[in-house]
Amino acid sequence: VITESRIIMELLDEWHPKSEGYKPMLPTASNLDGMKRYNDLSRLERDLFSWWCTLVFRPDGGIMGGMFSNPFDNKNKEEDKMSASMKGFMDCMRKVDDELQSTPGPWFFGTDEFDYPTMIDFIYVSHVERMLASVAHWKGVNLRDVKKWNLVGLNAWLEAFEQRESYLAFKSDYFTHVMDIPPQYGPGYDGGFEDDRKKFSSNIVGKDNKSWTLPLDFDDEVQPLYKGPPLPIVVLESMGIEPSDKNNYEAADPATMEKACRYMAAWKLAGNGKAISKFAARGGPKGSSNPRKTFGAPLADPYAASDTDVQPHVDTALRIVCSKLLLLDDTTNTEELTELIPKKHK
Image 1 (cartoon, rainbow, N blue to C red):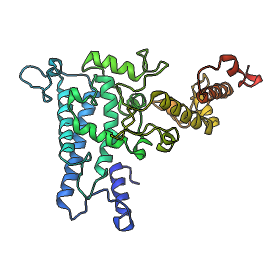
Image 2: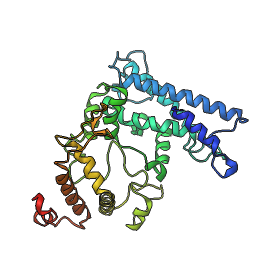
Image 3: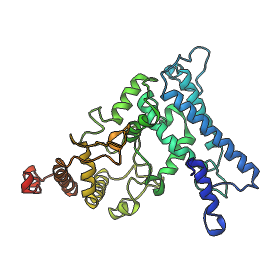
Image 4: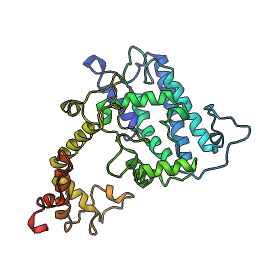
């Protein structure tokens, strides 16, 4: 049994050759320069992962001030006072950014042969996703702030990924990452730039009385939503929403985009309502029990039992949510919505 994701991806590439119409994900064995770059980038990814673990999952060490200069040439003196782990992580991320900027396109391999994301891009992106969320949440560093950190190559690479529906289909969000990282890696330690840490963390977990409060802002200052299509393109086109010249949706009409998102959410909810209500009912007093195995994130336990007593009420609540999402305006009052509740649950 092979469990190492990199080996699995390399085997899949080997089993789906270019001669059969598949795009190669790796340089050929005869391409010595290409294989050297792939192996060098793979080692750099391991270095970045190691520095990330040191930064997030260990308490902050001493401050690297005095004779140590800021590698980002930023005028903000606060950034000269990074801990050793913060400096190590950011120095390594700068190396990654330099590698991305060394190619003509946004990808690690930017040749005529590889004008699309390849194996090394996929190896990086799953961990970089976690890094974006975790260093903002626990260390107050928003790596997507180009003006502050000048990671131009990294952000161009992320935006290129975000314009691909195939990537967006499995991309996660910051809240999910900061909730599921501790059960996998251990607890994250607060530190870094304290004011920004509090700001970003409260945004991510919805405690800033803004990011999770209706009506929501059109975009999110910590995790941008419209660098690529926020919904399947066919859904956006059905609502008359088109991308800008830069192939993003940042200039879309907020009201039309909100309506499209509401319709999509209602369609997804209605299409799998029974299973969703059963899943959500695990949060009831008698739910989430699993005598076979203990999970670090109990509500993510795929085997956890639902609370059957609350499930009918959860189902009713979700029906009301679904109906509200489909309304063209906000004029429907509470009395109209209560008509959706089965008599036995009133």
